[in-house]
Image (tube, rainbow, N blue to C red; front, top):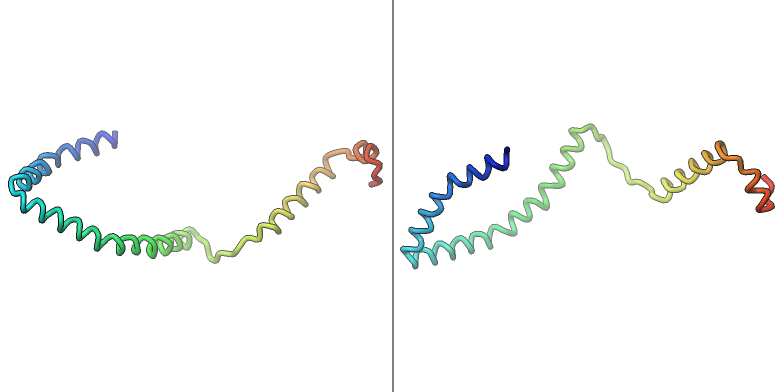
Length: 110
């Protein structure tokens, strides 16, 4: 439904674009000048727009995290987390699995 509404809105603006295209087509020099100005403005503004995204998005991200309740961020030690996970897995296996037959086959004393 929303996509249909957007397509309908674009169709309403189409006559305005056609009028601008006809005026620019009738005045070849004006069309070239308008295109050159548009291209130059885009080329000049592009680095600043990119800079705004590079600088602004992390700040916005931090603001959203603070709003969500994150008081401080801390680095995660992946080796320590992996070791803790393996310890939990080993404890769970020792508690819930009878290892005596496996140890006897391997000739290991528990």
